[in-house]
Amino acid sequence: MFENAIKEDLITALREMGKTVDSDLGILELKQKLLPCKAYLEDEEFVCDFLDTTMEEEKQECRLERKQELELARIEARRKTEDEARFKAKEETRLKVVEETRLKAGEQSRLKAEEEAKAVGGKAEE
Image (tube, rainbow, N blue to C red; front, side, top):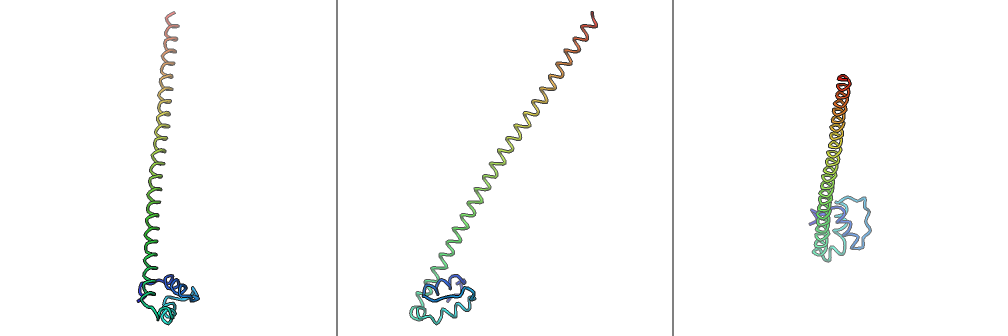
């Protein structure tokens, strides 16, 4: 009858029937409180349908929440991948600039050494 109902479902059903409910009660106590209710005794099928609807709504909410969590995880993963790609591109650019600077400095040193060698060689010939 209420085998799949969770505590919150039973509390909701009892409150809808106008009963005051102590949220500290367990599932068994809530079921025992529901069974003698006038609304339940007069229309058991309606109460069971109400509980079924409540449980189905909760399942749908859980599915929607899970779907939203997955979408958020996908968005975060995509953003992380894009951030990593941007970081990698910046790092590659930085390393390229460092390498070009190193090569340029090496070339300048080589040219300076050649000029000095020519200058020393030209003075030696004089």
